[in-house]
Length: 251
Image (cartoon, rainbow, N blue to C red; front, side, top):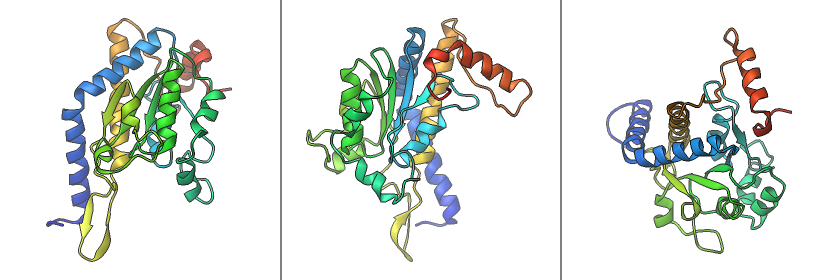
């Protein structure tokens, strides 16, 4: 590790990755934003899914001030975050064949919807089958993953394929295999993961593109405002009532 505090070096690494995705994924970000805007204008619904820490980026775009009200979280019990006990169960469930089919069969997803699937490695059965199953239903799929895993690791799915192989649009987070940006002679393992920072930024860039694309078409983007500003709750109530049939996180 070169000169600088670990904090400085991590920030430098994170900023470098953000610059890479900004420059190298601009076309994919535009395509993803257009796909979501097309879905909204056609009356479709929007969903996001991620397992383990990948779920953090999915949750970040759902019911979020400044975000699209139509983003819904597609949940799989036991894999959303690390709140399940033991936490290792979530990792095991990602490898279970058939789990994605069971979730899709009981979800509100239907033809004409769009699903964002976030999986850093994209190698486990759950994200691969979630993508193939959703597309079989007529759902458009945006995959957010590190493409490096497809060349440096082996798929854990029986097909030998990765998430990136089953998407309409792929966003490459550029995260190195292992998701650890720093090394130090006195520490035996690499450390300081940046996937959450980069993946969250990628998705917020897509959300911004979606909102601007809708506005360019003369459609008011269904955005939420902070409930901590005057008038925020009233604004959100209006948006949620207008799009009540496309929002699933509100009873």
